[in-house]
Amino acid sequence: MCRLLAYAGTPLFLEDLLIRPEGSLVSQSMAAREARTVVNGDGCGLGWYGERAEPGLYRGILPAWSDANLTSLCRQIRSGLFLAHVRAATSGGVSTSNCHPFAHGQQLFMHNGQIGGYAGLRRRVEGMISDALYPSRKGTCDSEAIFLAALSRGLESDPVAAFRDTLSEIEAMRGAVSDEPVRFAAVHSDGERLFAFRWASDDKPPSLYARSEGASLLVASEPCGRDAAGWRAIPPGSVLEADRTGRMFLRPFNVDAPHQGAIRAA
Figure (cartoon, rainbow, N blue to C red):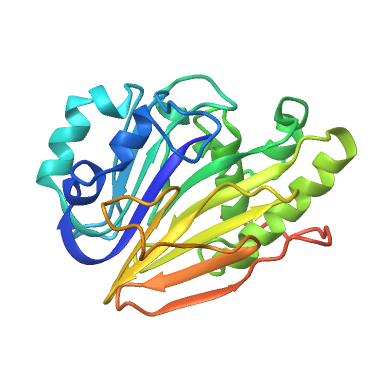
């Protein structure tokens, strides 16, 4: 499993959240406290929104704790909306193309979890990606496939429905061939809104927490900073939506009855 952190709010330097705090994301890459895999050293990445519509993106295969370029970027970049990820590979090799976040146009996505039995499902899952979007498939991991399949199902217009339909179809496939669960703790952003999902086909979704401070929101796999009192676990089967003004909405995210989602031409 991986560790992730996302922020939406008053612009700040990335190092103020990713490097400096006690239990920061970089610290979690060496010693995660709430994960079966303690070390997350199979790469790292950042996606941030600045003055342009499309986000900046940095990904690399070095562990976050030894990536000097990551440290330098975090010290220089100020952003009011960004995603960061440290990877412990469950599918796909250690390569830049398998590192999170993934980007397409204005969209960013990162994931902690798995598609159970993915090796036997990969061809079918990749078949969920539209012909127009398939050339964007650069890596081999399940997370990028989920992202592109959701883009093929209207992610840009309705992210919640797109991920619901994508996971519903995957779960229908998975249930026929594997006893391993689908687990999905993920963050998506279009540059204006941030969506944090927590769901699993069993009763063990990956950890995901949120903390709000005024008009700012933090989402993370594990609480960071000295004061853990302000962090709240996002309930299983939920999606938290926030925008840059500080408005937040928590609603159910149900992936129950499998149903075929229409693939949107892109």
